[in-house]
Image (cartoon, rainbow, N blue to C red; front, side):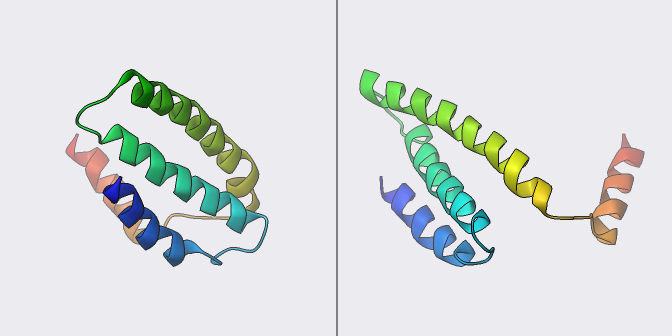
Length: 95
């Protein structure tokens, strides 16, 4: 699980303490589970045990994402930057 350790070592410290509690704890847990899920999903060979663990991680990860969306995202007022709006508009015009 080298990839998992590298991902956790890089992203978790970068985001740690960025938000106040309880939001920080939610983001840290989400980043850790993202790294673990990614590590298992990227395995080239699976056993019945790793598949079962990946299925469990996927369910738990989905629940964490819903919790993050419902409890954390809703607490912050966000807006798209002008460059994002422009890029989206240009993309739709190409279609």
